[in-house]
Amino acid sequence: MKRPQPFTLRLLPVALAAALLTGPTAHAQISTNPDALPMAAPPPPKAVPSRTTHSPVARSARSGTIPNKPGTAPVTPPPTSMATHAVLPPAVPAAAPAPVIIPPPTVEVPIHPAVPPTPVTPVAGAPGSVSERPDGVRVLFGQDKADVSPATFDALKAAASRLAARPDLRVTLLSYAPGKTDDYSMPRRVALARALVVRSILINSGVATTRIYPRAIGVPPAGDSSPPDRLDVIAEGAVPLKPAQAQFGTAAVPVPSSSSPAQKATP
Image (cartoon, rainbow, N blue to C red):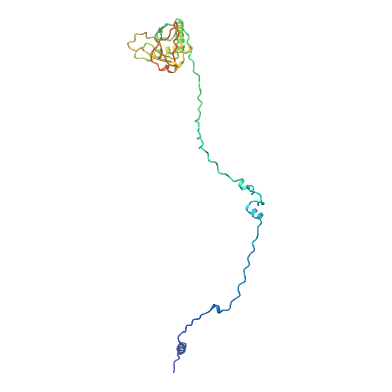
């Protein structure tokens, strides 16, 4: 009994026969001549759009100018609102601005008038006297006293009048008072009271306060032979001197007495 063959084995002879009949592939080359071909009809021409002729008025409307007539000058149109409202750049200043100076705050200081000294009242019977000196006057007081008698008061006013006429001199009041060396407080207090009395008489007689320099010395220095209860009015200054320089003078000059006219300082 034969076994059945597969389908592929049965087709194998058919495939071999077809391969033999086909043989090798042939290649061919074809040449063509364009001139021998029939000519095709040319394409129709394209339509050219016609150019629109614009009048000068239309062109001027677009450009913002007014057409000119023959023989006339060109006319410039007025500026538009945008040109009118155009913002111009700021002008450059020729110089820098001046700096701002802020003044300091003002402080109001109350000014009080100078308090005049208390007028001196002469005491009748008060011990003391006044004597002339080359550089001023010397006033003597009673022990531990600062009172002046009417005669002493008048003599001091006369000396003050002469000093008021000499603004180039400064007046120094050297006041002394006796006391113990272990207690200088009491003599200085007495000397200060005497200096204030004489200062008041000078100021009320016309001598400027800025020219008077009171000094309460108190106990006189050792070896002093003058009376201890005294006050020396010394007028100092270098003549000639200007009034503004009088306080820097150091030379003692004599004060004119009541009998001789007051010497004037040459400027």
